Length: 117
Image (spheres, one colour):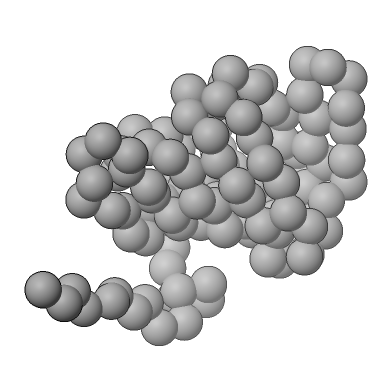
């Protein structure tokens, strides 16, 4: 049985993630799998200048920075100034702090159910 793929034209420019925290952190799933044992969700995370977002991952996630910049740090003391083209792996259990002096947009793919970030 063949299954059709899904296409989301111009998602990087057209999809507007909803506000999830503070006054400046936006996140929204564009698509999620239907696999109940190993779900995958992908979408966009946008942070604007303002309050840092501290997030503890309860799932594994990959993120690529597609626009702007982030300063990303963790509890181990690691810190990176991230720009477009940088790729990150955030393991389950990591506690990450995101900040920016302007804005940043990242595309993520996480091993979690839709809407459970």
